[in-house]
Length: 213
Image (tube, rainbow, N blue to C red):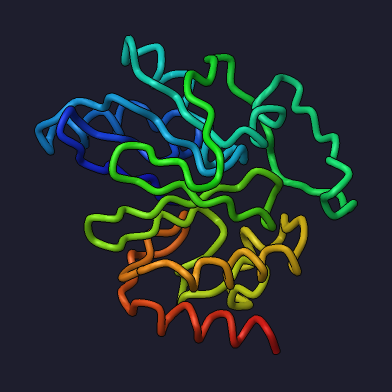
């Protein structure tokens, strides 16, 4: 499970927070890299992405927490899993612990958050969002894409790594979101699971083609 520190002029933006108990390690990594964490950005509401958000917020006074508007109900305690009329009417799974810290910046598709372009990519779960660093073409893909073994669309991961496909919501919508990403100048992939992978759009085209079979 991965989270990422993205350096901005005023400090780091942290993308996702890993499971509970990760705050000390995350803060130490930022300190070792020589800058404070100023903002926390969430790709989606699953526990391995929001688990340490509250602890980090309590230890980082004044930190901004940002998330997609559609994610807000899923961050409540308990999570509001009501589907919208225009969404696939399928159940979705995975731990949704919510967070008690208020989201201070609400994001929509095509918004910009510092150097990051916000792209709505639902499918794995409602409200999933990915973030493109327009300075170098790195896409922070959360669980929209998976980089274990190879780059794959969530829902079509290798047999030896069923997570996060095990908790998929809508495979057709996930594939639609992956195809949407083909319209952006991506150079590398920083996913929630697996190493950072190079390959540009060729890698994503191959992943989409495999998912389409």
